[in-house]
Image 1 (tube, rainbow, N blue to C red):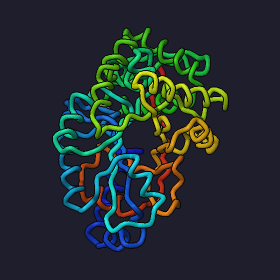
Image 2: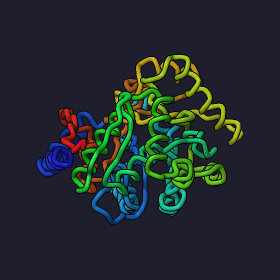
Image 3: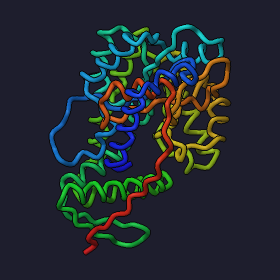
Length: 353
């Protein structure tokens, strides 16, 4: 989504808070509770080009969120408890469940100290190729290439393409374009494309991916904490919608099997990679259930209802946008207020010379 649309959406949610709409909505649509989705937790960075800032929050803001949830009267619960409450009769207090996608290194360095200090339960979804050192964080590599280079060459649809991006706005536009293009590729073609791009511009994709991810020692440290639930995010973190059913089933089942072998305990929960409606299919929910997962989480917004009205294998989550740091906006979203989805298709006007 563009920064203008993001600002407008935030402003409308702020208005819902001050108008009292959030309070009214919470009585009617607040549901049993909400599952919050975070990705990266790390200090603010300097630099005009930060296309992935939207998936980041600071450790200080995470601390503020937890304090606010307690102040607002939410029960901060484990993922197992969240699933239990979704099938029971409504309780007097709503719940909040904290989940973290991607298993990035800053989970252990920046997020865990805050969470441990508060003593709250949370879940981490792990794509198992990454602690093995085999995963490819192609989105980070794309960011690194565009941040460093003013002229970028790569092959798109069998044609050599050249982009000139000197200004930050041009770099953002190119990132949106290439991110969308890469995400639509089947996994094998995506791997070839990002490796080619990194090779042309001297970015070490393997080293970048390893440095950004937790290793098995980090995951074992988290798993030893009774407040932590380790869930699966498949093996390679692919867009499941682009896989054949057999390949999607293998990714889902193998992610569970690898984690269970490493941790020597059952793994009951998973999250769909990326999690938006374009990244998984209805059939993937069936595959997740067949693999033995109790729940499968999406990045589709919404609150969790009680009495079984929320499908446990397409769990909604409130995906926190790091560009909006207002606790008022978070409170409105957790009250069940939604805004019409805005369509946005970036169309780069780039110098191809």
